[in-house]
Image 1: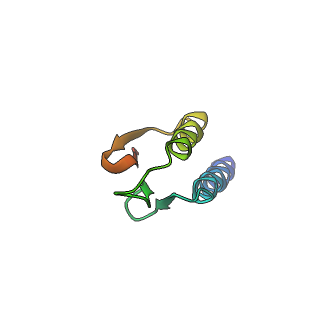
Image 2 (image 1 turned 90 degrees about the vertical axis):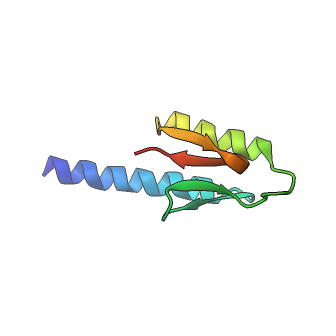
Amino acid sequence: MATTLYIKRDLKMAQEIIEEIEAFENFQFDVQRNRVVNLKVGENTDTFEFRKIFSILNKHRIYYTFENNFEIQIVE
């Protein structure tokens, strides 16, 4: 019973984090690749939004790596 509660809580938290990231104008979360994607590749990237996103990930203790073109790969 307790395990089910933790899974539901974790899924809700994960969805809230994804929605928080999706609120940014220049980035979106790619569920298939488990990656935060920069929508402004080849243009001026909004580094403020980029920093805010990795602050969100740090706050929730989510492991990630930085990739080319200001993309963030979530590590499982």
